[in-house]
Length: 204
Image 1 (spheres, one colour):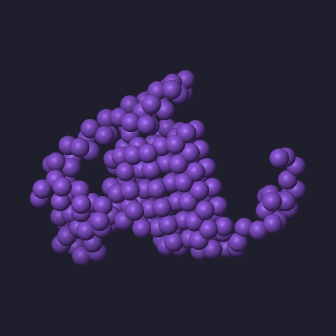
Image 2 (tube, rainbow, N blue to C red):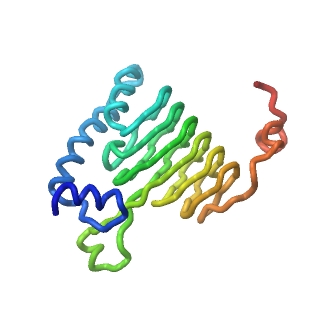
């Protein structure tokens, strides 16, 4: 298969074989930078920032990823807005595009998947794959140990509770949690007054 057709299949939801030598060669080059990023010292913040700008498709100002960071293509298909923070062990299966808005927070051990495989065993045995993009709005908080599956969109300002498995789209301005993840409630006026259930907010 020609390289251009492979790339088109990667980003259009069509089946392809990710073990194609031309794809693996490109992927290996990207992963060299990821290897460097994960071996930076805590004092090397400027180097981390420079590497992220090389690795990610897009990245805004004031973004921070706490190593270790894992991504199939080292973030080559990841688009960050500004002010994105990711705690330890963010895993992004970025075989196609992952879009993240501004001021998004990821807790530790979050996994975002774009890749899937056919149910039928014959194609799975050959490691056939297809990809669906993930979109996360601005001001979203994704709690610890959350898994977001291919094709999911999460709306602005939403909170995804720790340990959730997000299998379908979640609207804006809600708290959602569980396996599968479902909307618990809307975010409302009380959330501007109280935190942690009934404690009154006392800072600005």
